Length: 66
Length: 214
Picture (cartoon, each protein chain N blue to C red):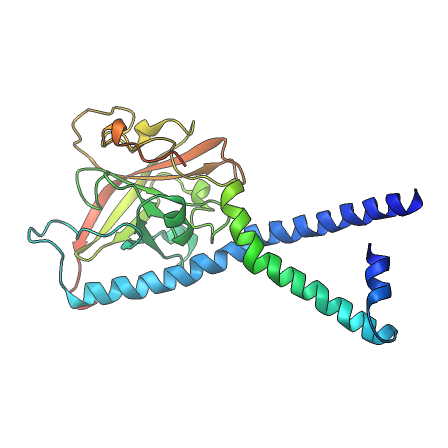
């Protein structure tokens, strides 16, 4: 996979390295700012909230359990 | 065959790197969002306090606050003088991303009953990261529009996530009439897990009126 990408990159070794680094950066930025913020709420592992409605309100009005 | 194995290897390494990046994001990247939101809400709340306009006709101990907005300030001296978070009204996932959240329906700071605040122990600035270090007698300071409330930690417990009775006006005795002014902090336990909840109880020990203007 990476061999193929490397072969497709233009220019000599130096240019190839630079473009490859740029590509890695772009992928990282997309992951960090677009993909991760979307994925994070779905797999949230840190819950501080008690499951279920607070004991002071009637349970029927149930907040969705987080 | 060789190409296939190499491809598979590359894929695994890539997946590993992405996972590492994701963990980095969880632990530190999410904090930036909380930080921005805290700044925004803090400014909003200070402006509202300074304007001195309590919402609603009947002035009680504190104003009614919309879900997702700042309600009070929490300070815990044991965690250093810079430890300061805006407590948000609401405990939905979106609320808790902005900072510690007050359970709607539980009492407000200073009221007889239970002021229940929930917060992240890891990720999103981890406001309650060190809550486990609190010892009986430690101060929890809550600032609202009208006053400063000093609570003293009384007890620490680890309970199941389903033990909602800790949020009752008299913890563990839902339905009983409250006589004490309590604070309850809830966060996840153990760290990085949602298996249990760490609960810290405190009781009001002092309260001061807020000096007008600031």
